[in-house]
Image (tube, rainbow over all chains, first blue to last red; front, side, top):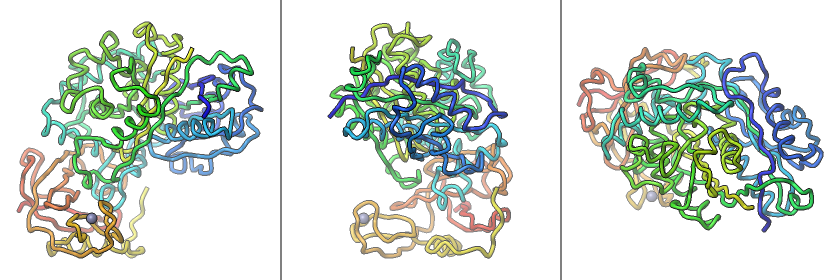
Length: 388
Length: 131
Ligand SMILES: [Zn+2]
């Protein structure tokens, strides 16, 4: 089995690009990734592309060949859809394709356009990721579902809105220097607490924004990197995916995310590393409570301890385990189908030392990314390591 | 974005189940004692295909809830409304709570299931009322 290197990464700025098409956004990210890699588009053998709501937002299905064309690739493409984990699975399958020896050069990433819809239409489009019969028809929105989980968490382990506000403030602080982030500004804990209620106990500043954007990665075999003398010091050494019952009501414990725990166990085993060896992580904080549950599922904190991590300073940039140095989904933005790829792009930059926040973890060699679908009915975890 | 389809195609298993909630409702139990909601051909917990319909307990308890302030477009429900997951023992059921405000609900509050028609979508709507 060959090793997999991240040869190049590309992102669009995350934010509002209401006047731009999805194909233009993805082309920008893809060309940036190829340029960063120093790899010719003609060498790309397949596009693995993530997108969730294009058929609703842009009335555009069948996006993979369209995006290959936009990126100037003369190869086939496949779209992966796993709600907010769409790009995560697209990358995971690209890793598997390279490892198997089937492909030497893959382009993987994703794109989402969301701001061209009204807030209510985005809310409804995102709700499609929940169980249609038993949740969507019952009025469960995406924020509403995480609110149900947050209330269940508080009831089981304690903690409250102020702990969550610290997660929001931390991630905003991290985004200030990130040129790709939607909100490059700090917020205070008080501002988060005072923001309007969306779905109690969650308020506006517990939620990620509505975002347009694209991400792309050039993944290559170690042999290809060596033959072409690529500067590709970061390897993807572990990949894992987990699944769970679609509806919250059908899960044993609504305050836990076993799909993420399963994905992490698989990725850790694959890479041969343990949770306590991870130096830095990008986790899926579509809502502040999601970051808390991720920290526990990823084996960084015991159940009930994740809620206080940001408040104690454990996960801030000067803490033992900085989490979401990019700003996270919360402040960097969450173009749903692009997010999993952007997390790996950010982690690659952090480990290479060319991220604006790399100075927070100058000696980091092991990074982890966690990308969740819906209310974590699916989860994808990757371990990245500095290989040379 | 949804259109009302009061006479649209039935969702086999689900529609019958939702209608039954007016009379107390039922759930599906497998030979190994796992509870699930219809439609089911197989128990997702153990793979058993030996399934039977059992009556829901008369009342359930709120397991978690949220007061929703931003509703999806076209859903019909005027925010704020309260969404809750209700524990009935072997199964839990999600729906909208009627006749109680968010301040009057806590984890453990007892409710009984019922069904309404969502005028905006034409679909059945699971609701809970004070027990
Ligand atoms: Zn069973």
